[in-house]
Image 1 (cartoon, rainbow, N blue to C red):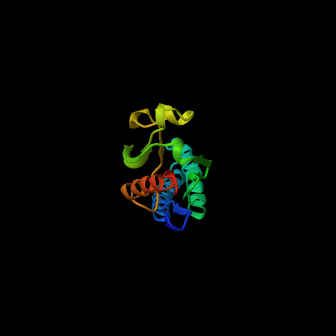
Image 2: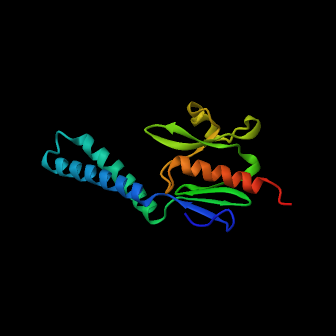
Image 3: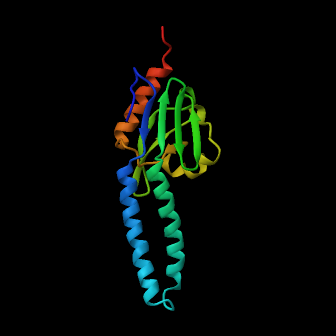
Length: 161
């Protein structure tokens, strides 16, 4: 993490260790399937589909390893940049942040004041009981990140006298 409330912007990056771990595990699985496919093509035609999908995911993980996701916190709000694009929320658009379970991991959930939805995010996040979420995999633990986001929101939402 770089920056602080007193010296913005605060930049939180995606965890390269988590990405590298995923890359190694998936790479080993794909290598196993390639070896099995070469040994017995007739019985493992489904393996080819998994190899292609696994190869595509490995490619995305390599790109994510080189250019990790970022959260940028400053006086204007929160910006999340990932492989598939960027999204900015101003501090007055979003409510408090909290840790929520999602799949086998945890994510940072938040709501929009007044129950305002956010397009496609609201429908997929209904099980969380939240309007939106920030996916996991950051260099800070989820509870520390939620705390930092709440501190930043409070700090920059309060009018400076």
